[in-house]
Length: 549
Ligand SMILES: Cc1ncc(C[n+]2csc(CCOP(=O)(O)OP(=O)(O)O)c2C)c(N)n1
Ligand SMILES: [Mg+2]
Image (cartoon, rainbow, N blue to C red):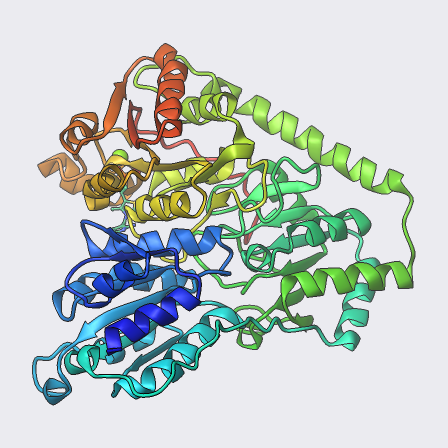
């Protein structure tokens, strides 16, 4: 067996279901021989996004893999890997490399070196004999501790070298970190002593399958649960203790409870300061639980920390709180839930005009509301895109199932949501998988809807076409006045038609619901769909002011 066949064999043993890829790369053919289907993208950046979305929905239990050719292929994959790095998504990147004799000669592109700063682990296979060991290291890096993309560059001659000996490789198991019992005792004490604790749930809750444990903890304390951008849907946002997710925009409940909180108890979160996520306002006590020690005291001084897998931590806290205090009268949680519900009702009421608006061009919040009312949210996986759609969706979409919203935004590459959605559909073919993107966003990656059509990946892409880069209005004032710099133009339903997708352009509010029904029915029958809404520019965001949030 040669290097390419060896890698394919290892991928098979790791449960790889499909290979996101773009030629040339010998592993594509070898995977096909083993029944691992190649999904060829139109652009490498999206191919990485497909592996990313798949991995998120699989909660990192199976990892998406992307293979590219040496040079242009892997160079063009850089944005995707950088995005996955910013989001700590454990995917495997397998680029070809120049032959070893060309390494370190100008102008050879060395993927293992160039990608080192945007991967958790990166290496070059110097010989075929090293491949099992290197793949084991790669999978270990993906499966234990905080995730991140990993990369193994295969120099030209290594693909063809004959591997000697039996392939000694078993699927790499994860080793979740268990919390220090003393840290748990102390954390429980702090939680019980707090007057208004708030749980801050990050995406670690999803990777650890800790949604139920965190919801149980919230009920027991009791404490409301706010979510980060990638942590959105860490617990279902329809849960009576959920406050929703936050980018720069957020539901009012989240702002309100954050303002009152004396203790922020972060779980499954790096607490990284980012433009597109919540911040901890000054003056709050912080308990920080994460599976990566280097997160602690990085952006915030922790008053206490618990290092460990989110599920093990949440379960240990539940047991310890019961030991220290026992159950609390159910009326305490009940009144907290009523408090949250009343703020939510008032907030939704304040936004009702937008959510039910008949205005033309269409109001984005009307589309989101009609979408929520029309689809069965229990069966949906959805994601936003960069720009105004992220702000609109993050604040308004209420998930009903844990892990059904793919939040992202530490880097915010326009167009990234499209690949994520294709990957999600590969992971969950029975779900209705939706990405909501702006028109400028579509310009970045839109051609890859053809990847969905060609491969029968039945996603729904929603384009909010307002004819401008709405989110950039404030920074392109003179350029727009003088040269119209902000405008973008296009008919994306027609683009979709030209790329073999069913599509519809919707301009009238009364057509929104019938169009959604048709689109969803088409995806359920096995074909992708593009729904283009002609919308207003839209600068209304749910941003109740709380200093420092
Ligand atoms: C690759 C990339 N380049 C630049 C940006 C900066 N950026 C953020 S939003 C935006 C415009 C978004 O326009 P559109 O997708 O049409 O959404 P709108 O705000 O109009 O709803 C730009 C240029 C980015 N996020 N990603
Ligand atoms: Mg736009």
